[in-house]
Length: 270
Image 1 (cartoon, rainbow, N blue to C red):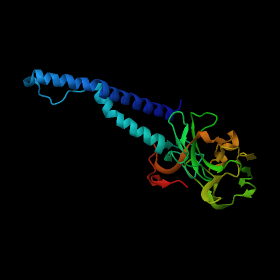
Image 2 (cartoon, rainbow, N blue to C red):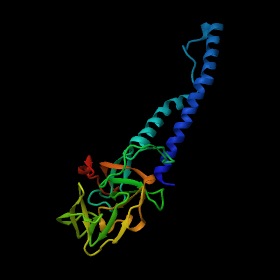
Image 3 (cartoon, helix red, strand yellow):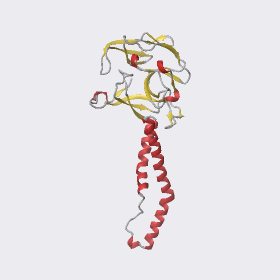
Image 4 (cartoon, one colour):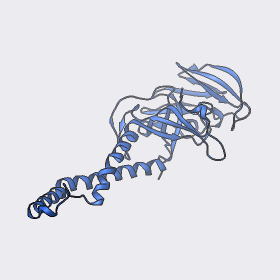
């Protein structure tokens, strides 16, 4: 069970339990307490100082925590959710330690836990940086770039991407050197209207091949092309596995002893 699923389960259970306690008390027990309190006031008014009966501690906690659980559940399930980037497969777009926010309604409104789509809003577009549940192990979240849509013919050969027979052009920018990458070429890939940077390593070529994307599925690649386990290795991303579209970096920190990279905060994701 993934940490994301566990947290979602806690939110759902917390919302349900606190809501049930509060509602049952409000409509079943609170009226009886008020009636007993009013009767006591009439019988011994000189001994009654409170102007209302006290609620049980459990009910008081449930009433306080229910809106908190509900708000967090709604925001996380239907609006935005934070994700942490643990690997370098999306360098240079995303670095190890980036924390990103994901638009949860970009690809439709889904129920928490079951992930069943209840409202269709939009579909992935070519070039989207998408979070999805890994097809071979749905408890694991992956983040890659969508390059192939249903029906597309994808070819990756000689460090070059072809879509439906058209070569996707790229503009070399020189050599890239970062904290986890050495001797890699950085280029701007012109992905049919979406320009973004990619890395290639001449001495460590990535997997090549040809694929036709099935209906209701997508082909995803990492921007770090020669160091990414993506659709070239494990296949396509089913539409039902989509979580949302990453749109901004809100923090970067890879833990001690490193320091946060403050310049990454607020950076949009192309």
